Length: 247
Image (cartoon, rainbow, N blue to C red):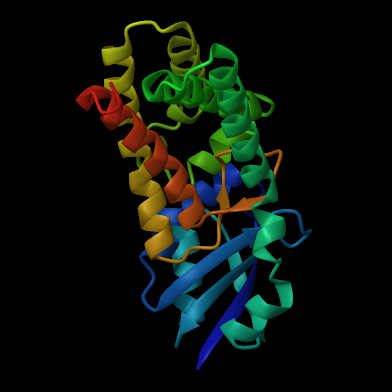
């Protein structure tokens, strides 16, 4: 039976969680894990089949942290998730609302100009997208970097990339809005978003219950296929612009 084990730890922040991540990911039989750093005991919850508590403790020790031992075994994974599950419409409401606003603004601009131009519309949407997402990330740059490091393949190896990434989005947004060097900007978007999507795909395939940092730390959005669609949309638009689709 699939069960969840809980451990007391000294994982005090998201940077600590990011540090222990590769070690916990290598523990056999663990399907999912998460740390609640807001609780006094910094509870680590691991879920899977026939998990050895000693292997979890050893993984923490390898990363330089302490897991004091199994504190209790909770119910099956399905029961545990059901008890804490939030309706998906509520979780994704901020992201869906922002997307609706962005599409609406682009539509109004095209309406004002009197004729719909798909290339211009995509450029304006991508500019508004990157500027909006950079804004939310920059509200708490340090917090975003901590969360981003938990799943992004570049930030895991180069932690400073988490602090740079929002400024990359800011620069891309400004370039799209101003119409600067469209070919170079679309190529950059294609590369940046493709690399970013690798970590998202890995997390989605592993069904990890971690927080998505796409809107920074302002909203508690779970990592899911919705995040992958968001990245895929930018990749598709950049590719379409490079291929001249819509001209």
